[in-house]
Every structure is written in C-alpha cells, then in structure tokens.
Length: 479
Image (cartoon, rainbow, N blue to C red):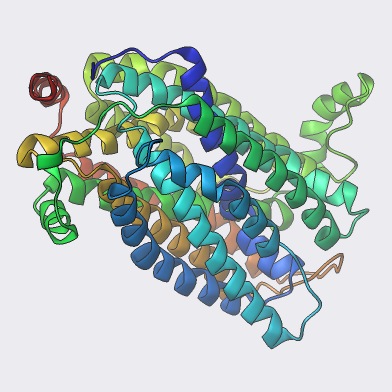
C-alpha cells in the first residue's frame, strides 16, 4: 500500500501547487529589493532591515508553529491538504498587498511594508510548508518521490521563467512606464491564477502514509528527535546557504544589467533574438535593451535548468541523491564565480556562463526536497515515530532565513557601494562604484554559500546504500 505508483494526473496536480507558490516566491527572490528601492522608494538600508528582521521572525516563529499544527491536524482530507485549501485565496491577497504602493509618508511606507511582508510570509508558510510536507506522505516509494520532485521542479522552472523573463517588460508595458501601477496590475492576475492552481492541487492529490496512533508524539519529543537527527541538521544548514545564494544572485541581476552591463554591447548581442520575435508578431521585450537583455539572460538559464531537471531522477536513482547533489552544485557554482572576470562588454560570455550554470544547478534542484523527505523517513526509521511537517518546517526555516539574509544582503551591499534609491518612473544617475557592487553581487558573494553547502554535504550520511535500506525497512514496518 505504501509503495503505490502515482498517476501522471496526481503528479501534475501536485506540481501546480509549486508553480503557484513560486509566482510569489520567485517575485520575492527577483524583485523584492528592487521593488522596495526603485518602485516603493525605500532607502537600501531600510529595505535591508525590513527584509531581514521580518524574515527572521517569520522563519523562526511561523514555520515551527505551522509545522507542529500541521502534524497534529486530523481531517477527512488528511493532515496537509486542508492547509493548501484554506490558504489558497488569502495567499494571493497577501501577495497583492505586499507589492502595492499606497501613498503614505516615508514612515507610513516602512510600517506598511513591514506589516504586509509579515502577513505574506505567514500565509506563505501556512500554504507552502504543508504543501512541501505533502510530498513525504503521497508515497513511500523513493523512486516515485524522485519522479514527483522532477514534475514539481519543472513547474517551478515555468514559474521562474515567467517571473524572471517576462515580468519586468510586462510591468513596464501595462503600467505605461509607471512601474508602481504595472506591478499592481501584474500581481492582481498572479494572485487569481495562483489561487486557482492551489485549489487544483488540493483536489488532485491524496495522502497515503498515515502515522499509526502509537506513533503520535508531543511537540517536545518532535524537537528532541530533530536535534538528534544529524542529516536534518546538515540539510537545515544547506537549505539556508542555498537560499542565501539564490536570493542574493536572483535579486542582483536587475542591478547588474542596469548598472554594469554595457548597453550597446547588450543591444547588439540580443538584437537578432528580439528581431526574430518582432518579425513573427511576438514583441515580448519592448524597446528597452536592458530589460530585454535581463529577461533573455534569465530565460537562457531557466531553459537549461529545465533540461538539467530531466537528468536529475536518472542520476539520483543510479548514484544516490547526495553524491549527485554535491557534484552538480559544485560545478554550477564555478559558473557563478566566473562572472567576476567578465568586463561590461563580454555579453556573450555572460550568457554562456548563465546557461551552463542553469543546466548543472537544474540537476540539483529537485534533489534538495527529495532529500528532505528522506530525512523524514530517516527520523521515522530511527525513532519509530513520523513527524513529516515539523521536519519540513525546519527546512522552511532554512529557506526563510536564507531568503531573508540574501535579500537583505542585496539591499545592504548595493547601498554600501553608493546606490541611490528611485521610485516610480524616476531616473537617477548612479555612482560608478555601483557597477562594481553589482558585479560582486552576481559572482564572489553568492558563490561563497554554495561552496559551503557543498562542503557540508560530505557529512550527510544518507547515501544510496542507506536510502535502499531505509525504504525496505519502513515498507516492512508499514505492512
């Protein structure tokens, strides 16, 4: 019963939940710092404080609470699916509020930003944490989990593709140059679409792994089990490090293209691509070379990530998740680090490095969450008690802490290099030092956490041999 194969419909339905959540998450990663400094008009240091403080409160406060509550939820729909159902619409509303630009005083803007960002992270935890934990109870078959993760992260890549490739040109287009109006219109539609997809996830999935009554434990026992779980401690740290890099790198590209990349060289490089789209009546990118280049740069990386994801399951099944994760993450980091050597006119090399990074990072992407589901199995294997959501909530702490630190570092570091905030359609000439800061933010700074994560994974003990042993033992117990 516990090793049932999962239908394609259920895998697709499950993956739509991550597509929806990432319409929010990828917007936070890519545009939060930029939104606060260039659209909402906050100073970089104030934006940094809000993202860091609220993010840490949400990470250490909301996630353990939601995890404990989800593990103890008992309904006819299961433990985790009801959370997806009842948070779907509120999450969309929270995302719209967080990216709105009411006309308040500067102090009022800071208070509004802090409140709406807090509200958004609370709803995101209430939705995405049970959603992530759901992957650990849909099936006990680790091969099927690898497959589910691959479906899930192809959906993530589609969401990321839209946000990082088309969102900025669409914002400029629908707002007629006013980014504040444009982002509110775009977020309204994303809220509606995302809520519908989350409801589809609820109706198409099923929870199959149900803990026995004698496996129930107290919150104190769950926490005690966590801190005895070495693989969990390692994955918590790895998750935080990975999302520090993703937030730092993803949030810095818009500054990199606006302040470092040579506009003439960029225009010459992308003109054959934009001309082709123009010739077939698909003018996605408009006349702004920097926003078009930014979109196409992200597009190349995401397309190659999707291709990389398709190799992930085969490699993980053959060599084990840990070893494949280390290798792919390490190689992908080299293609981040290399950006430090490129002058502003080396646009072709920038694009080439981005697509190489995308391919190798794509291999690692589904493996992270499949490994966390394995950590839940490891805990059950060791303690004979299953607490899926609390383990995933701890990983969400790592995610939120990483996102908060990474986003705060973007705003803080670019501010240290002299960046001057703008708002709406306002244009400001930045100091020359900003270009240096932007280059550091897409190369040296984000490479450090990735390399640290690779080092930590050598101490992660769940290799291919142990995966097979755990799966076999748990299958026998669950009979």
